[in-house]
Length: 293
Ligand code: KIV
Image (cartoon, protein in one colour):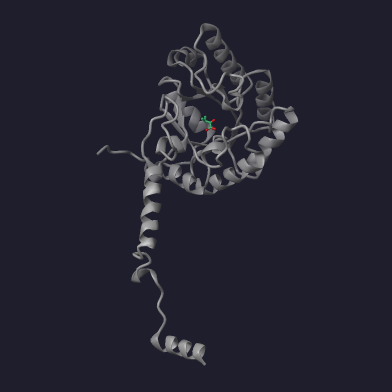
């Protein structure tokens, strides 16, 4: 049996930007995971992760949309508020959904303020490192809200990228990923996610990154890693992307738990005597008498 160390409560200080920067400086890997509701927030909080992302992947994992494109700002706000209620120490990042930041700097800042003021997010994340995303990141940072960028495979614009596939696999494409990461850093992003790019490309860019780099399918050289809660715990059908490591099979557990309950109800094994409430004999007798009179 593998022994797992969860940081002791005493060492669980709130994760702040200075603590994140210090961990990067010391080369201590940072752990980020997504969460979308109160119970998933409780779980990741108790497990002692450093950063929690209320990802727009929630569109697919908990809302059942076919992609992240359809989820609305109001829907993600509900998820973010629920996550906030379950977190104590991790640094909470909220994803800006597709269409909630691209139109103008003012739209981006307004959306970011909603996540901070209404949902208690510590930072927001936006996808892409092109001109528009960099301008929006800069505007949000200037308004006083920490921003995490996201380059490589950016699911909101996956159609334009040719689908859910690794990016940066030619010299030209890798140069573009690097250019975007550096532009987001220059715009003031405290962190950038590298998604689905060759490990060697990430490793080559890392020495240029003062911002925290969180990888997902970008190899071991990044400052930290992120995985989607439902992927790592197996709360989904199928294995998911190549970079997913599964640590549990919770969907199977959920199905067998509900199936066992259904079987118990159908075979009258549930509810049993221990699941009911009692009433004093004299009260029951009086009740029966009143019903029959
Ligand atoms: O929405 C999300 O879950 C993400 C992570 C994969 C980085 O953006």
